[in-house]
Image 1 (cartoon, rainbow, N blue to C red):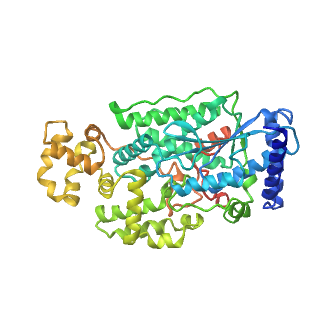
Image 2: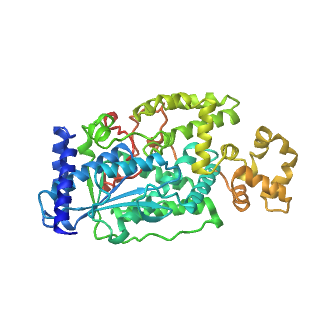
Image 3: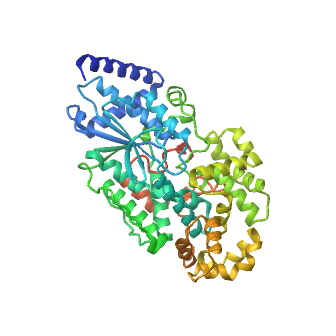
Length: 499
């Protein structure tokens, strides 16, 4: 880069900073100066800050979007005061169901902050356990989508049709691998910055521990004392979980590097966000042009992680398992989630359409497009007819496929691995969406134990008191470790005022 070009770009970046700061109120400007101070101290002084690299995990939600904007303001502020400023790595986990709208929103935010062509900034995406440059136009990995679709079905069947586990587990369990990769890739980073509260981080660790134990994984009581060790432990639990789910069919993937770029520090900014009303923040709504994605995945609440698809599953559940109308199931879910959906500013038009014929078609199309499952396969998942030697198989056939009742004995033979007509094998694989070896594996498995809601208030429903105490072990662990940003609770309107 020539000197003239560098000077021109520095002028552009300072203009971006001035425009960004113009949207800050007095408290936010004070918070920015505190963030600058924390970063400089963590780097070892202004002389060392140019060699310092910071990671922020960005899922596209309000908290991570706001944190990213604050970090960019800090980066450009230091650049105006010192010869060099810190390097910034922004990483996103591309999960099954990530919509074009969410990708475009991420890309738009990066553009507003002038991140794309700044050599001091890395924009990354992890997909199918591979670190890639961020590209909003890149098609989803076919292999990654196939693996996620298979995981969703297996978890759904083994959890006896539990909607939360079905929709959440695959994405949450990918976080250990994600953090290991983005903290160690290409020389690694020195620090992680997060707007998450210790409470939220503790709730995630409690969920991870309970989910792993429910699947039969041996879990040690204490968590590692370092972030690098913690992320490795998270990935070990995830691998152990899927090893229990798939049994002899489990295929291990290549482990990410467990060696970080020197000691991995944590810079928390949750306290700097305490007084910020994120939904009405001009910096978010005007400068960043942030808008929630109705079809997006919402990390911070597994009960409502994908509201429209969850409502669709509840509608199917009501119709097929409870002899109610599809609309009754959808409306029951929407009433239960009303407070949360209001906080996340779900459009009224979308909610009004959810239980209608058009809404059902839209939800079915979404499930097919992003998860590869049609209604027949989703209903099969909700019944979970194959587990525990097919104890629910007769009821499933009687309710959903009465014409196949005459073939019940033969279907049991198929699932036991005995010779049977190819037509029956084809029918059961088409109906379930799973290959025969995995169906036979499910036939031999007992249902997994779902994470205890009493121990994990993060899994609370709308009727659960919001001030229910967090598991003490999880709280102590999070307080000690000060986990990195982007653990799965960083993407939603915060609940600080409620706690």
